[in-house]
Image (tube, rainbow, N blue to C red; front, side, top):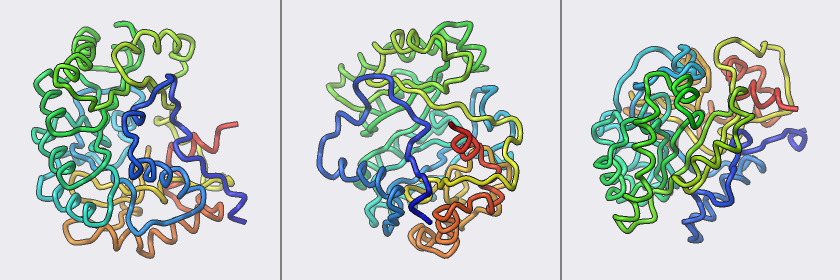
Length: 332
C-alpha cells in the first residue's frame, strides 16, 4: 500500500533561473546530503538523526504581511520571544555530534531582529554544520550586518519579496518601504565581492500570489541582477479552514523524514506546522530536558510517519489543519 503514496520533496518550491544557491557547493558530502534530502522521504528512510533542523531564532516580526499565517494568528499561540543562546548551543552541540547537515534560523519571525544572529551562525559553522541559512524580509539587512554574516560563514540567505514596484511590494509587505528594501538588496553582491567571498549565496523569492502570476517573468528580470537565484513558492490559504477532517489523500509529508522544528523556547515539533493554531498535540518534547535524537527515533514520530506512509494523515487533527497539506493535496 505504501508504494501508492506520493511524496514529492520541495514540491511547493520552484527555481526560475538557470543557477541556484546550491551550485557554489560541489563537495561530495554536501551532494550526499542533498541526495538524502530528496530520496529519504521518497523511500521512507529514517536516518539516525534529522538531516536538518528549523530553529526559530525569533518569534517576532517587524512586518504584517496579509498572506502570512503569523499575521492571521494561525501559526501557534501568541507567545513570542527570542531564543536564548544556551538553548541554541545545546541544539547545535547535539546536532554536530550526530552529523546534522543543515539549519535554518527562521520560522515565524524575522531573524535579523535577534541581536546575536551572527554569533549563532558562527557557532554552527565552527561546529561543522554544512548549510546554515535563514529567510528574511531584508528590511533590517544593513551593510554592517551583512558583513558580519559573511565573516560568520553564512552559507545562504533567502530574501522574501513580493513584486518589483513600490505599489505592489508595499501592498503585500505591510510595514516596509520599497526604497529601503531596494537600497539594502542592491548592494549585497557588491559587499560580498568586496569581502572576496562567494557566500552567502543569495536567493530572492516570492510567494506566487494570484495577483503576481501575470508579471512573474518581469519580476525575475528585475531582481536577477541582485541574486544568485530567483524562485517562487506556491501560495497557501492561511485565512480560512479549507480542508475537513474526512478529506483523504494518497499523500505523505516529506518533512517527517527530513527535519524537525525547534521553537524559540525549546519546544520540539515534528514539522513546520504551517497554519496550525495549536501546537500542543504535536509537541515531542523540549530541548531543555530532552535529546533530539531520542525524540526523532521515538514512538510519537514513528506513529506519525506510519500514518503518513499509509495514507492516513487525515486521522491526525493537526495535519488536517495544516495549510501545507491542504495546498499539496489540492493540486491537480
